[in-house]
Each structure stands twice: as C-alpha cells, then as structure tokens.
Image (cartoon, rainbow, N blue to C red; front, side):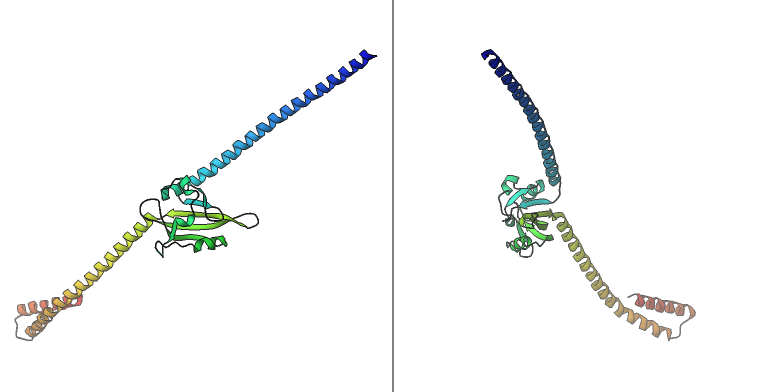
Length: 239
C-alpha cells in the first residue's frame, strides 16, 4: 500500500541520514587529527628552524649565503655586526661588493666567484671587508659552492672572521722585533767603538809596562808592574 511504501522510504532515508552523520563524525575526527599532526609538525619545523638560526647567530664568523648569481639571501648576526648593515640591508646585495683582495688593496677581485662556482673552495684567504662606515676590516675569508643532489650549483656560502686583533698583535710583534734588532745593532756598534777606544791606550800601557819590567826594579816595584801587566792582558782578552 501507499503507507507501507512511504514507511519504507522513510526507513531508507533515515538509514542514509545516519550513514551521512556517521561519515561526518569520522571526517571531523580525521580533520581534527590531521590538524593536530600539521600543528605538531609545524611546531617541530619551527623549533628546528629556531635551533639552526640560533646556532648560526652564535657563530663568531660572519656567514653570508647567496643564490646562484651571488646575491645575498641570508646572513647571521655576526655578518650584520661586522658590516654595520642590518640583515635586511644585506639581503639583496652582491656578496662580492663587500670583500676585496688584500693583495690588490681595494681593487674588486671577482675571480673567486667564478672559482667557487666551478667547485673550488677558498679557505682562510686574507681579504678586506668594507663595512658601511669606518675603516676596512681584515678578515679570514672562506667560501664554497652550495649544490643540489645532482651537483648543480645553487649558491655560495661565505664565512669571514675578523682578525683585526691578530693583525694588531702581529704589527706590535714586528715593531718589537725591529726595536730589538736595532738595539742589538747599536749595542754592537757601541762595543766595537769602545773596544777600539780602549784597546789603543791599553796597548800603550802594556808596552810601557813591558819596558818598565826590563829595567832595574826593587821587589815591590816589580810586583806592581807585573800586576799592571797581568790586568792589562786580562782586559785586552775581554775587549
């Protein structure tokens, strides 16, 4: 009958509704679990990123990471401190505009860029770094290419260590060495002059003493003369 068919349809509809509601609950639970996993993973990635950033910022060396064309993409705290620029000001600059060859003074030396791109490493190369303000800074400069899994060049990582204090110490040491060499030279000249000035009259004293010993002397006079001759010879040995 019509009522039986309608009842059957209602039962089917209620069954479908229950299935839909059940699927909604399953999907809601799945979405909540997925959100929790995404949130957990996001926090873990952020923690790792913070760890890497804190590690880089704790380095004494200034770090500059560039793209394939040498444009700076990332720096650490030491890089900002040594250059006087902020991190935002450094990002977007060409790294080779900051470093110059210590041999050619302030001539821009771009050969190292092509060398590093070709896979050559630079290690502890003495260069000058030009900060935003003030005098140039002597640094130990190292650089290497960043490659992907296929070996394709992706960028450059550069490290620069401020060696101003070491250079000052080396200069002071060289100055002290020069002063010591000069003092030794003056001492030698002084001793040579004094030796000559003393030796000439001493030869006269030794000659006169020898002549005196060839004369008739009493015992006391001969003792004095021999003592004078002995002392003269001892002094001549010294000078």
